[in-house]
Image 1 (tube, rainbow, N blue to C red):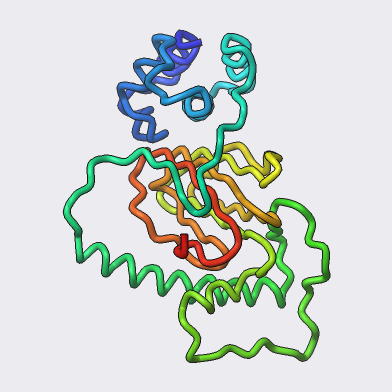
Image 2: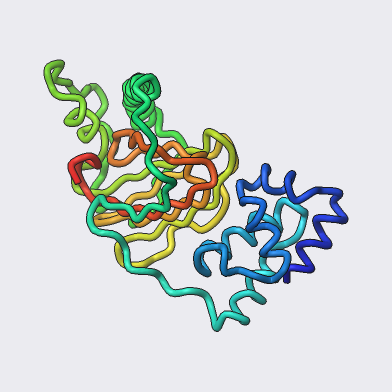
Length: 254
């Protein structure tokens, strides 16, 4: 399998460094995969994501490679135990000293993102655009009543307003690839796979469930994340793998 990927890369006139920059898979891991060594990927789930991204980047159909990988590994890996409510298992570099300038910029971005999301959400309800949350079909009719507008309380706290913008009885997660592309996997609370694939830059996906959404982000630094109507401001790094779980309510409470 590694030789197949290596030969396709060579035929495409791509270096390992170019492939790493395009897929966010680190250079040592690319070399290891081309040597059929998947131990540096951090597990079969991440290895599958790396193989899929590398194959697509060099023009290969990833499906046959996935079948070969699963056959050699005894089948597709089972779903892992999810983290507790609002708690993510993170693969992080060593903590650096606080960067107050970056923190201030992040706060401004969070406010602008919230205002933009609220405006987008209102326009989405009135104009009935084509974007629909992927997940179980809502039980009730959520169409707005003509002639009625939702009053907002100017004194409400930002977190309360953000939560009010999303259905209170559901978990709503929106992912947008803003800094490149990323492999993502999303599952409902019952283990149903909602999405498993690549988000290229500019793409967005919205998922919804009654109880819980479980995520794996292959390149977390490229993703902008909104949970229950509120932007999650976190220090995700390019190429970083994130395993996240969210339920109803304010994502910062947990």
